[in-house]
Length: 140
Image 1 (cartoon, rainbow, N blue to C red):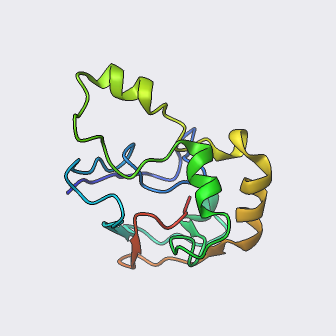
Image 2: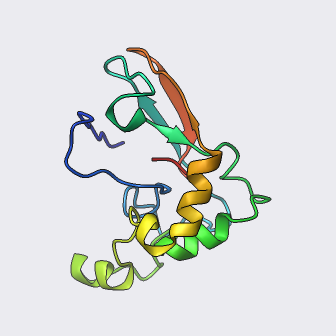
């Protein structure tokens, strides 16, 4: 389990992404055809959709296999579902083989980023609300 806390006032934010190995390293022994993992995004404070970059935005059903642009998005950010069975000798080698592009879709594929902005869903979150989602659901 990991915990990531944001104030909403950070100078930079992560754009459209999935929680690939950059956020959630998986066992190399996991079957790569089975995308496992559930995120629980918890609103510590009220987050109206018009403030702080609109809180959490999602693209519904973007984790499903029939999502027509899903693989194009994975390829653009260099997403991989697990570490290789042989592992990595160092963090530097892991970063060299998996460049940290997870949060950079807007620069890598502006047209796909614009598409996600058009089809996104944004909600007003109240303190204590919990969003349960697949780690492979596109969100920002």
